[in-house]
Image 1 (cartoon, helix red, strand yellow):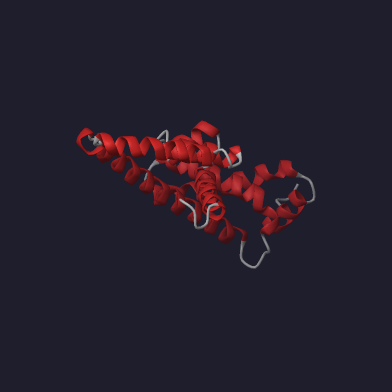
Image 2 (spheres, helix red, strand yellow; image 1 turned 90 degrees about the horizontal axis):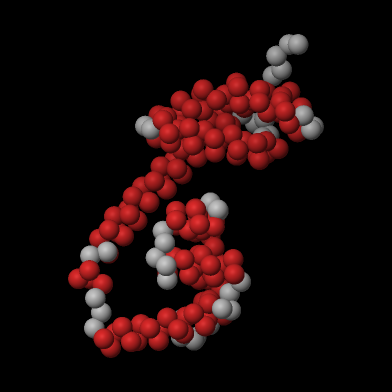
Amino acid sequence: MPMESDAQLVNEILNGNQHLFREIVARYQSRVFAVAMKVSNNQKDAEDISQEVFLQLYRSLNNFKGESSFYTWIYRITMNKALDYKRKQEKLNDQESEDLISSYPEKNILPPEEALIKSFDKELIHSILRELPPLYRDVLTSYYFDGLSYREIALKFKIEIKTVESRLYRAKRLLKDKHKGGFI
């Protein structure tokens, strides 16, 4: 059987022959890994990035328009995933540093009156949080009250870090919209 061109392979996959996606992986996995390795400088990270790239490819195959070569399209996805991954790692490292710095006890000790106000604020906030859908409330509570990082929340709820970010944003937006001119 003659080797199919990338365009033919994509058409076959889009027409229901998903098993042919293995051929795309076989053709491009070493190149994708090489690009990911160059950006991440870490084999484990490069493997993770490569896996993310092929998942994205599988989900987005119908978006390939053929305006550039298939490899150019894959390369762009790989670079985007690798740079996103690198940014997330840097953000996590920054967050871990902040968490470490904020864990020093002398900064966390509150005078009794401030502790009392804070406990009243927490009760008020908890009552307001009950108005949110559980999807948003759980993420917001985990972040602000349990002190979990984005990564820990993602692991806890088995979701992507980007999903944690968007749920936090939406939860805050819902609270702000609901209580315009109020106490939030």
